[in-house]
Image (cartoon, rainbow, N blue to C red; front, top):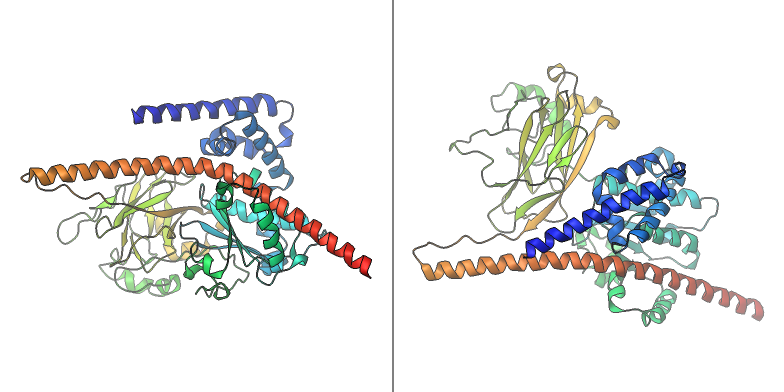
Length: 514
């Protein structure tokens, strides 16, 4: 019965998606297609998740979703969002470090930092600042589709001179209109007392749901949302990261750990290529970037015990359709939470007519072994990559994997290390995967013990029901979040308006006294 209701619900969503597309085509595109970037229109007509994002944010009211899409698409064309790049943003803006992506919260959401003290109101640069924020948001959406952001406003050492109402309204609109479902939570750290006083007034007008999405945190309270490893020392953390540019600070992927010992850098790999080529065990040193003879079948080598190294690895059930590779799973690598299920499988399928070079990197190289982490793949071939936890390490939602691929003219013409140094960045396909820790189901006891077997079956049924309830709860929370975050964002605007009025009154009083 529950499965039938779920199926009907999914069918209803699909009907809403098609209705939204049909009406957008008939009511908004007709005689006014020049208002939008055609790349956005094309994605709307093909990407169900994009349409569902707007619908969910507007509680599946098609009229409201269409208005949101229209406003969002016009903004994207006005600011040239699809063409934003490092070269289109003034270099000094990157160098300030006022806005950047770095680290993760306890739920595995990427942290989007705003250093408020570094912001100075300036009408001449406001457009560039808005494009700068859009650049980071678009970069995150493309790298990790569907992954929310946790926004952290670092208010330390900031004052009223750092508050720009126009800029704050723009940031609010980014999450309210332009990027539906992107906001996980917004944390305001070390807020000045004058703003805290204004919040206490507005707080009495809000319900508990709206308040729960906007977090005002002291240094000690911040630790309940973000682990110390991703907090700077002035916030009570241990993260010694210091912003500098170039390069952009959000790419924290490294080469995975080797079977034969500690992590080896790509430069060290290159220097040892000739030595490794002469050894019989080249394939066992999978961290090296040496061209390996490709196979048209999956990598299913047998170990010394005659067992496939894929044994025990979680097999993916979803697929990401890329320009060069189909990658399974599409978004998440799943690992068990105990000593078992410590392997997960990545399947790469070459969908081009040319051979591909690929490599896999991770944000936690000391925890994972990846085999093979670098190799080649012939046209139409598939390769199984086994990702296994090293020693007693446990998977974490903060862990990420990066799959990189590029077309090669001829597999035997050059070595992989040299190929990756020379290939143009624009020709590299990148896809990111995050880790998901699932609760392992305990195996049933021996059938000889009927009582024990019955109890075990009951536990399994209860566990399955609990997972179903949890899944429904997460869906309800998503809908609640859409409602709550909108209220919170509106209240933030009210707070800042009240602060602005309060400051104007202080200035008028000062003028009268003088």
